[in-house]
Length: 291
Image 1 (cartoon, one colour):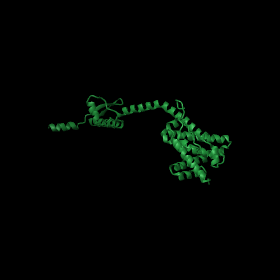
Image 2 (cartoon, rainbow, N blue to C red):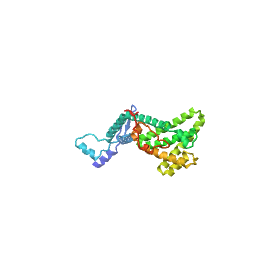
Image 3 (cartoon, helix red, strand yellow):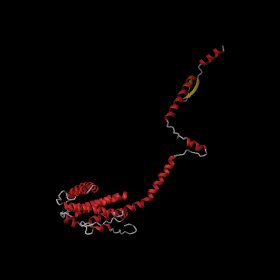
Image 4 (cartoon, rainbow, N blue to C red):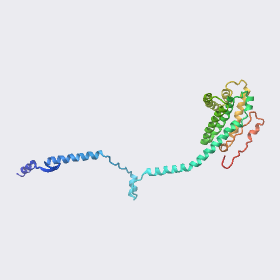
């Protein structure tokens, strides 16, 4: 009997009055439970859609350190940020010194290029190598001396390579300025500058290969570039090979730091009167600022 009464109670529908839009609407307990289930589902979906904060994973070592009394996770990013700031501060502190050194190298590069065009006896080259006194002959002789300076300064690390770039920059500025002074048409000058640029890089590669090989290889490079394949006297090639060899030996004997500070180069004569004088070097003169 008690069981029958319990079943009848469960089947009995008891209505509840729920206010909706200022009216009372009867709602059965089943509908209320269904509504609560729907509202719970919507809240669950809303919770899933909203972005949840990602917890930082803590390693075993961090847990041990926290257990010893240190609070808060250890973050490598803080130390990395401090190290980055330290490097930036050191770089900013070195900027004035770096700019000063670069300025000194530029001045030394200008002096070295000036030595190539002012301390070279072009008349002797014209006479002994039977070259015409033209702008192209001047460029070939200057190119040879600039190349020897580049070979020497590339041995001085990053500062020497930077100085090589500045020397080449001054050389092209001088070539362009001389062309304007000679009254060359701007269009023709621009066209010739492109040809001279191609010849310059081809000559650099050929001379580099020749200096690393024997005298036959160096003579072939000089015959192709310096003489433009028009040298019929082997004595002229022999004279020029000897000149390049002794000049490179002379440049290698000069201290690299002195060249970076002063850029002063004294070229040996084409025909050496006293071969032993190449071993007697003169110390460079410069002030305390290296200018």
